[in-house]
Amino acid sequence: MQINGNAVEAHSGEFFDIINPATCELIDRVPKGTEDDVEVAVEAASSAFKGWASASPQQRARILYIAAGIVRQRKDELAVLLTREQGKPLAESKNEIEGFAHVLEYYCGLASSSHGDFVPIPQNGYAFTVKKPLGVCAAIIPWNMPALIMAWKIGPALISGNTLVLKPASNTPLTNLTLASILSEAGLPPGVLNIVTGPGNIVGESLVKSPKVKKISFTGEARTGKRVAELAACGMKRVTLELGGSDPMLVCDDADLEAAVLGALRGRFYNCGQTCTAVKRLFVFETVAEKFIKKLEAGIRNLRVGNGMHENIDMGPLNNRRQWEYIKKLVEDVEEKDEGRIVTGGRVPENGVCSKGFFFEPTLVTDVPRESRLLKEEVFGPVLPVVQVKDLDEAIEEANNTCYGLGASLWTKNLDKAHKGCEQLNAGIIWLNQHLKIAPEVPFGGTGQSGIGRENGPDSLSEYLDLKTVMLKT
Image (tube, rainbow, N blue to C red):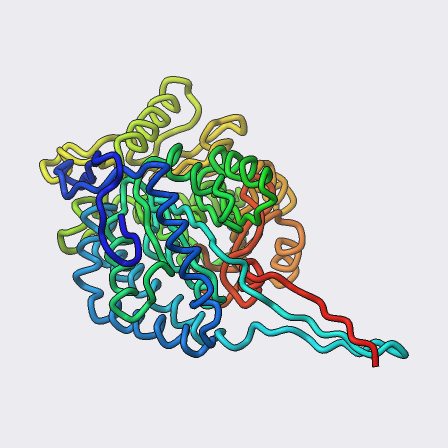
């Protein structure tokens, strides 16, 4: 763990192993944090708050900008570390590391934009508003995109003048720890950013319960997010919850099928399907379904699966044994219960390269009944169910038949269909003729069981600021 920018041993003296998901080999060991460690980290953040909050926005931005530059310089070595602990191909890891730097640079550009307003009050003087940082904030992040989601949390929190305690996922803390060291190297004062590694039921809960923590930003599964909200409510803390989704992709009869197939391939199998906004349910018009599915099947069969450290790999392993066993059992149930036809994939690869890790073939399933788990659950892995629909009305109805509402994509050349989809699809972000792309310049978040609050974009700064109104009578 890191307190005040320095690596320290946990109070318990215990460690947990970090495993390479492609080989199941031990990479490293990190401290198993305790409630005492969380208290030390929160105290460090609390002590650093006054000095960091009083720094000018330009001073804060300068440090983050320097850090982003160092990250870009060390992109290759950081990508290797990320691939070893997370499993994704090196190209995807490099993209994520660049994303981390880009997010910090984006918030540097917003440093001076968060200010109050002047409000004339007729016959009663005027008023103005002042925005102040909240204080100590906490961030809890997942293992699927550890570097990028770390940036989503620390960017707005730190540029707004808050200090932060971050709990990384137990499977992927190494890249986060290294990035924190780079921020310290760039000049981030001691205590402004602290990391505590350890189990969620101890480190995470202690962070949320801490009376000095004013805001919690959590990304993860819905069940854990509800627990975070429950604990935070006792202290009237602010929360941002990004809880995943079951994103639909709708392919109309007038869509560019070549582009849609490429969108489905990337949207589903990027990061081995372990992305909150991945294509998890695909609805295609009956009139083009046969042609579309054949093209999609061919594309899936051409995906190269293997260790992300090797060249020309399209998809790495699942991140951990729990995910691997879940996906394997899910597909086995589809076959045993006759809940669809597996067109391609559906097996653990038998070649020697994939024999030791948590690999699973990219899988396409058609003829999926509406009650199937493939359509009801958030399937966090490389399995894509396809459902044929008659028209856009049926596609939208089926797409909205979920408790989630994170993202959705619509593929059409027709402006009326595009408008109808944007109006009627229940999702926090809707893509037209694309899927998965998330830019830091725009708000990101969902509805329903996909969470509350928004990350990214200028509005994300308000999540980390208190608004004070001052009334003056003249």
